[in-house]
Image (tube, rainbow, N blue to C red; front, top):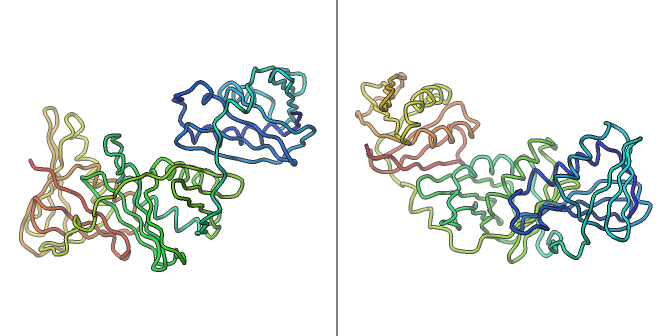
Length: 369
């Protein structure tokens, strides 16, 4: 392999593949990234066997070839080279990589491609394309409710149901649930898949960093056991989660007796303050509605807090308690300035719905105090 490329382009490419894949490699070779130079492009690949990231850049490819390189060391070398300069890179028969930028020279020991896991290309058997804006918004509104416990693997993902009626996403960890729908994201064929939250989180990071146009399309390749997301020159590939997602519809209350509307910013501020008293033992924040005023309180061995928010509620008084982080996660991921809370009693789940967003719904289990 012999290539010439701009230092900044190399640095950006390496950053894309390194930031999206876990550094806790189960095999020594997974500490490496794979470089392939061909047809005027360099292909970078990094995987941890759960998620693979593929990124292309254009370059002057003098001689085609492949090599795997220690990812961190290669990244450190590139990032210490002078900015906006060209770097020449070539490998010898022993997979030793020689790098030169101006008067600076490095060599780094690599490994042959054959030692690296085989990464499948984006599946072309079933391909759909959806706008960046729709997918990004729906993922943000649901992903935080996915479980992070390894023992509940099927809940570590987000359920996608997409077809002629639109796209629906659902995530739950057993104590809370998030649901988002969009009728514009349609496909001719119906799919029901569980996508690991990990790959969706990396997709969000990429979109936040590169800020593509909201109308730009993400190409989604689906096979029997994997999913891939391709946008511009970057592709994320992950296995799908196998198993049966819980019947989430049973969790959503069909009837509620109590309902009140409240301003997002007011509830966020008071809940954040109350949450300061719950960090010691993972306690709960109590919400008490009395005479149309929402009283918010929390206490610990060292602290105690109380505050109140006036509302237009005119129903019967009630009180309930929730994990404050569950409330805050909902409030910071919706677009509406107001939300509606609906419940039947203090021990049954509460339904939280953003005002004006009929295709977005959250269910939170109360905490017994």
